[in-house]
Image (cartoon, one colour):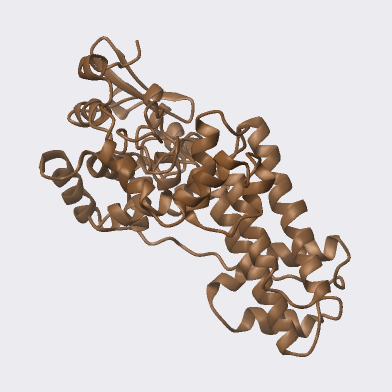
Length: 377
């Protein structure tokens, strides 16, 4: 049975006229609305794409899609295309701009569209694509600073690129491999990235954070629920933002949360915190989110809280990537690596390597458990 809180059924969600009035006072909002009513701004996606980039334009465009006045398009894909156009405008050299455009279109965008179609796209894929595209542009600019081009790149250039600079340079490997395959540069040797052992938060600190989130009623419900999903289930912020109210169900007075196609039984008091959060969701009183399906609604129309905003909230509590690693390590002691990889959204090879490093290889563990004890031998 789906959870439909009685308080929600009784009162629904009150509109907040003050929020609408405040939005109308923002610079440019009134002008754009008047232009829509007079026809000076056609009600089309092409017309909005031609407007100067701003958060206000994006918000209005998404609001019009939410209300059905504009055809539905994936908001993240629209923003990614705008971001790509702005990035390419920063490149002067025609051949560099064309190489980067080809890479973004046929490596990142093509893969994103395929994953959107089959439902396998992860929330973090957008940021990953942006970061890798930026590093690819940095590599092209770096080659120009050495008075060479991608087509003239040598093994010496490749080796020098990886020998110096920040660790983010490692992500240029993907662009280099793509360029070699597309014959945009000579066939060169691309070094493998070094293996890095992720740092884990001390377990004592993790447990202290869990106890605080369990007991401290002064904390916002969103922080308590999201924080516990990180600390107990090693869930990444990208996946937490995508949780919907319909992912929460009750069965025999027990609360279950659907994660990676599995209905997980939530322990007390996390079960109560989740149901309380549903009745106290933020950003539900505006025109943008009257029927938001998200457990953690954001400020944009029909969109969840952004990953960066959620990470900032959790970081303020001391919950970081090291907290998730600590939770992941602890879960590996109880769950087989392939199963856990799907549960937390990581690559199975990474989970297997972590299990091996922690001496918790599941096959060995299962074999040991299967042996008869000395008393029964």
